[in-house]
Image (cartoon, rainbow, N blue to C red; front, side, top):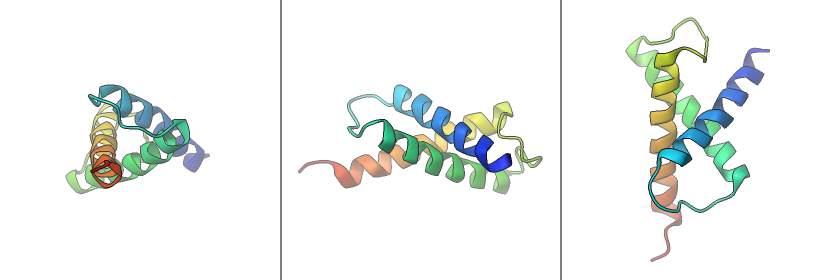
Amino acid sequence: MGILAWILFGLIVGAIAKFLMPGNQGGGWITTSILGIVGALVGGFIAGVLGIGDDGNPWDLGTIGISVLGAIIVLIIYGAFTKKR
């Protein structure tokens, strides 16, 4: 059940990050979902390094904040690679 919670968490985090990002990032809901899951993993890694949310519970407020930050970072990187020149 833990992995399903993290996937659901990533979907929610991706939607929040896309809502907070200014401008048009492109990509549909599938791309947003995948980037949200990747962002949640990045944020979870950062949280683990900082010692936040070590209990494995993705619904902790600190974990949510850092995961949204991780998803925003992933969206910025994604935007940099997919931007038309």
